[in-house]
Length: 288
Length: 296
Ligand SMILES: Nc1ncnc2c1ncn2[C@@H]1O[C@H](COP(=O)(O)OP(=O)(O)OP(=O)(O)O)[C@@H](O)[C@H]1O
Ligand SMILES: [Mg+2]
Image (cartoon, rainbow over all chains, first blue to last red; front, side, top):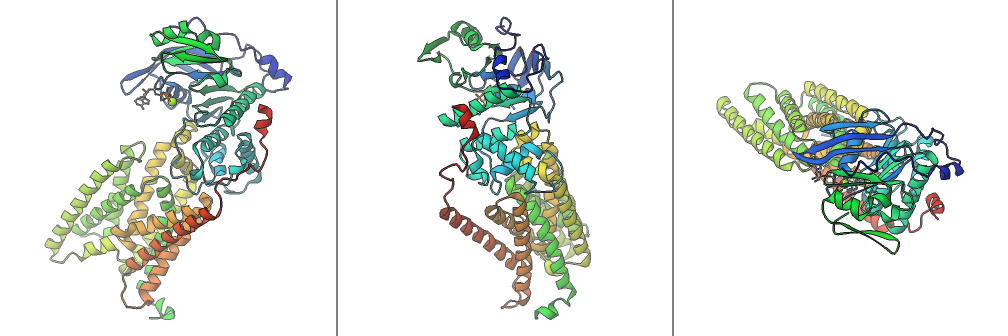
């Protein structure tokens, strides 16, 4: 429904910025292949339709905020892209191929839950899973491997967690664990980053820091990012488009096109008021 | 008896050799049991092994093959039952109580048919390390080698899947398959542990050394190593006390279980003491953050 009028927007106007930073990876021509294509995708779980005929396209280097109320299917959408859930109808294409588990082009940080039983596991071990956790065998330098440790420490430093490197994961706070999971997702230098509510446990300064980090990766490395959040405001300066999910439907477009009273009312099927105050957007009448 | 004459008895050699193999296998598998919060599944598999052992006795077979067969079968079924075993305590408990009931039935049938008393049952419940045969030693050596080799191959993906099954699955780790494979290893390890320490005391070898090591070690590799050392220490130490200690005829299972429990208690105390001595999170990050500068 409301997906029709604003999909297939041209690539975002962020490209000039990128070249000024001397980024590589942006050399791909502007008419390059889309990273994600969904066409008429429906997902049923436990007999309920979670997503219904969702269609959208996401281009390389775009930073997309995924919004929507609890249970809208945001996490489900990411799992479809990861190949963990099979859609009941429609086609999904990632880099021109069907989604599959273990796609090395994707980095993923799940919605946070505390990591159970992670005693005797240090932060650097957890982050290291992103590098070689899927490989068979013990890894011949279990603790050493200087190059491996250097890569891990660089990723930890990016999320301001270098000081936590040797702490047991079980003793870290929710926000600290979340930053480790982001570092883990970044470790394999993915082309597509899927982050499920990465900001939900972070304090304000770390929130700003993580957003800046992801925006930087997006601009300089041409990484495509889907970031699930319940608050679009801290993301507004950096995102290209928002993907809004509600009642199984999706709307995608620039924030000022999608987060409007008219679009959201159509999406929710109920009167929604979008209020702008103090430079922030507030959605009144329903949950984001 | 003293140490020099001790080694001349074959039954004592057998006890030390089988005990060593079992301690190694149980400690290695036990570390992942602790990590995956599957201690209850481990308990259930041993109880099911008890049924297998009594069933085998009823058929006039040696108990160990019966035990291994039935607990492998149960592990396979439990593994297929659920994607994740956490929170499956009710189902496991139902299987367990049914299996134990069956075990009791077999035991009483065995006792009445052979006219003997239930000493076979006592051996299975509390361990019979002093009657371990050379054949049992070879079998436990084979099981221990098999478990170690399998864990060596599965090490990284199993660790990943135990800590974070969701991300592991997304990264292409076959989480479900690993879960079944691990339960099979667990069944094998518990079955041979029963040989040494009996159904009721399996925790002493399976969980106590691993849990103690997990509390003390900074990394998974060192935890595994420490678990093996603690397991071997408890087993061989327990056997030495049983053979040489005062008050002749202290049961070996009792000595082993006591040492294992002491290991765990000691580890808890040390971990507690360490935590109080050193502050948890460094107050200041040791390195200025790269991200912060770009953010500003
Ligand atoms: N395995 C499952 N079986 C049945 N229903 C499921 C399953 N997984 C998710 N659901 C349902 O799908 C709906 C969407 O779930 P999802 O986790 O995608 O929501 P979300 O948008 O991420 O919400 P939140 O903001 O709370 O994270 C929910 O109503 C949930 O109950
Ligand atoms: Mg979610």
